Length: 295
Image 1: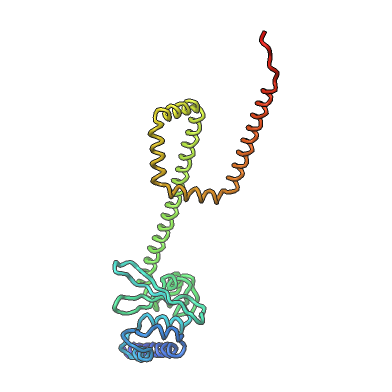
Image 2: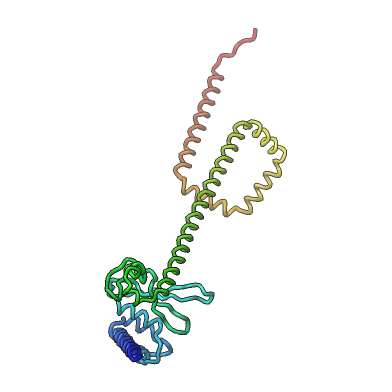
C-alpha cells in the first residue's frame, strides 16, 4: 500500500513539473502575434493571468495548453472525442517549431470531464519490449506463452481481451475495404454497361437513318409544308423569349471559331463569284450566236 502511495505521489510531482515547464515555455517562447490574438482565454483577460491560472493545482488544462504542449514536446498530439450524436471526431495539434522524431501522441477527451492518454492496441501486443526480461518480441502473447516467468508480470486475460478487440477491428477494416472495392467494381461495371447501351442505341439509330433516309426526308418536308405557319410562329416566339441568350452564344461562338467562320465566308464568296462569272459568260456566248433564219 505504501509503495502504491509513493508511486502516486511521484507521478503527481512529475506531471506538475512537466506542466510547469510547458507553462514556462508558453510564457517565454510563444509568438507575440498569438498573445495579441488570445486576449480572452478561459475567462481570464490577460496572458500573464492565464499562466498564473494554469499554475494552480485545481485548474484543468484546455486546448491552448495542449497546443503549447505539442510545441514544447515537438510531436503531434491527436485528441479523439465525440460529437453530440456520438460520432468520433479528432483534432490534431501540430508543433510549429522543432519536430522531435517519434510516433504521434493520442489523447482521449471525455466531454466536461478530463483527458485520458491512449495507446494503440497494436503497439501493446506487437513489437514491444518485455518489462520482465527486457527482450524485444514481435508478439507479446507468443513471448509470454514460451516464458512462464515473464507471464506473471502481465494480466493474461486483459491481453486476450485486447487481442480480441484488435481482431474485431481488423476484421471490420478488412470488410470495409472489401465492401469499398466491390462498390467501386460495381460502379465501374454499371458505367461500362451504360456506355455500351448508349453506343448500341447510337449505332442502331444511325443504321435506321441510313436505311430510311429518303422516307424520313419526305416525311419532314411534308410535315413542314403542312405546319409551316405554326413552326415559324414557334421559332419567332422562342427567339423573342431567348434573344439575349442567343446573341450571347453567337458572340461566344464567333470569338471562339472566328478563323473557321471567316474561311467559310471566303469560300462561299469565291464560289458565288465563280458561279456569277460562269453565268455572265454563258449569257454573252448566247448573245453572240448568229441568228438562224427560219426555213
